[in-house]
Image 1 (cartoon, helix red, strand yellow):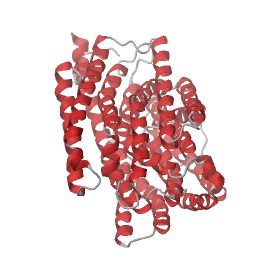
Image 2 (cartoon, one colour):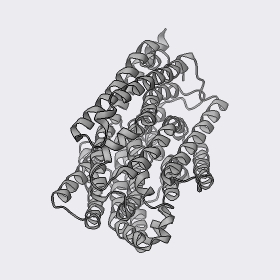
Image 3 (cartoon, one colour):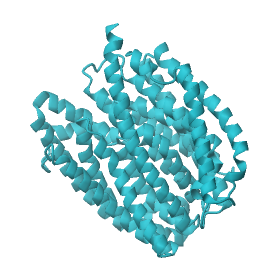
Length: 523
């Protein structure tokens, strides 16, 4: 009886810390929603929107990779090992070396990006090669956004130090500040009746300013515990970081690289990049809530564990927690794709055709959400053990699958939906491969206590889908695009609340919540 009792406090802390990080991420994503609603209203779905949103893919890639634990994965386990073996001073010295070397590398990367911006854009959206005006706009926006890479990556490097010390809140809240700044600018642009091209230019410039705000916020948070001194010294610890860090960072970036491939697929059709972007923004809300928590809290727990061999005690609890949130969210994205997109984006220059394309892409993304979350959880085990090769291999395979799926679907029409379907297939392959390897290596030994909540979540999600179908019939009239916006928002709120209530009422007696983390320590 002692082991389950001992597991309870740790499982409760895991859920609490995950909720803190997830809630901060949701705050950021909600502000991001408001931002994107105004972007859609300002830019619509035409060539300026395609150019701006293609250029924004690079900052979003960096923000998401870093925000979802991309730098945590290589840095945190090594930092904690140095701190345990040689003390806090040596660990801080290593952090300063890592930040200094990374800053120097980023200066070179940003300079090269400024010089070769058009080629960089073609790497993000190759379809623009046949649209020279859109390519030129995207290249100019990219040049304005590139300083963001330097500033926010340094901030994320220092935020990984906070995460290693289990101080998650400030690092998780930083993206909310960044979205708030962009939202304020968008409100000013709307008040000034800015034209799309000029508005996009101001937004691109302000994106870099948000990186500066991110860095300032993290530096203020670190003042209380002591700032690491930046250094260009190359130590054996840096050699260890580089030896595994590059592969780890690339492996942790796999989901975002898949989304870059999806952008390439969508760029073959005018307006599809914008549709894919808006769908991805909605998809990122639940993925961010679960994925960011898995990439910060769970990694720190796994890295701090003394036992590096045999089954991982945290894995089963983390997977059940992640899927308890991801499964109903995926079901809701599929069932409610049309009303969600309509209420959020169908205003101003964003019309009915844009809504249909974006909703189709969102439904396709929704099918891949549980797989993306499972892959995130599975990958943390190998990152914590500083064994990135398998996550890297599975990530490369996922990217290849996305490319092949994109080629296979090239002539199927609706490029935005096809791009999202390719990403979903890639997430599924990645999750299945990682799960199979964990089983083979004996690291994951799912028992009844772990699998029961997942089965309960599946059944409760199915019940929720039935309820949502009934509610959609009842609320069809107030959800219509010609209704007042407050009526539509209220109807969408009722839909979401009703679905959430149905899932909770079904999931609680079935055992979808709490039973696993509180009773079973074996993963």
